[in-house]
Image (tube, rainbow, N blue to C red; front, side, top):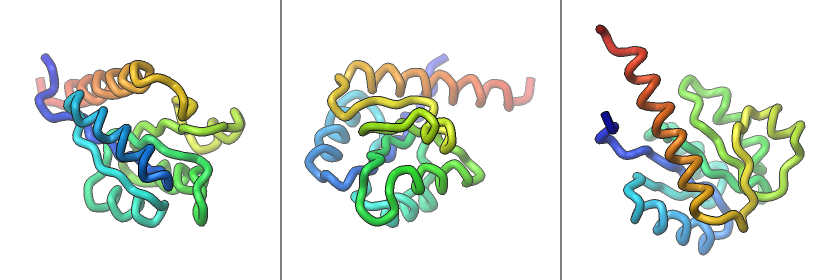
Length: 131
């Protein structure tokens, strides 16, 4: 059975054009997408409505993506976090980012990661539902 509730995706990138382009693409594929241009905006949006997946630029001014990912990972509801932009493998493990994509990776790869996250969410829901 397919989950009728679309996967919620929070895109965090200080490059508004990149965030808006990706958001438009993901929306066309049926995902519920919100964008944030800063860590502070992202935290506020994540508290307001917890995302299933976070697509995160690691190199942002102010609180960078590493700190933001650690902050999101410490929340009660840990989203699947995907980092975009050059990453240090030790840093990725440290903030519990299971996927790393470069900003130049194609949309098909991003959609594949999101499809996996949707299957994982559905499996978790089925495991927690009464028999």
